[in-house]
Image 1 (spheres, helix red, strand yellow):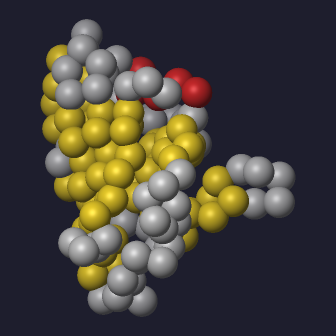
Image 2 (image 1 turned 90 degrees about the vertical axis):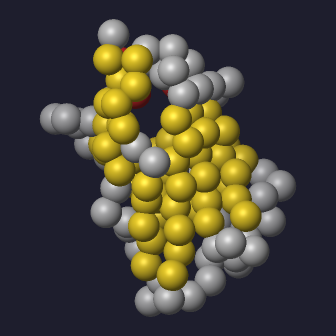
Length: 122
């Protein structure tokens, strides 16, 4: 089973940037759509961004459009999330996962990583 390990989180001031990485091991994710999700304290985990296996199509939750960029390098079996213009409300644990869309159109994930903490100070 593929294992996913996130890294790159940290403490950053509002307006700053971070780049998160999600490295896959134990198998390849090159044929999978991948996604990033986040969970803020006291809130449910929510979808942030997804990318198709080829990297040609990306989708974002409205709150991060224009600020976050999802990308992937299939040769490195790694998915990235570039976080720009960060806001305090972006503070959360960020998870990557193999992503799929439900019949209702929502994104769900499987094969979750352990997450990486992003904290944005005001």
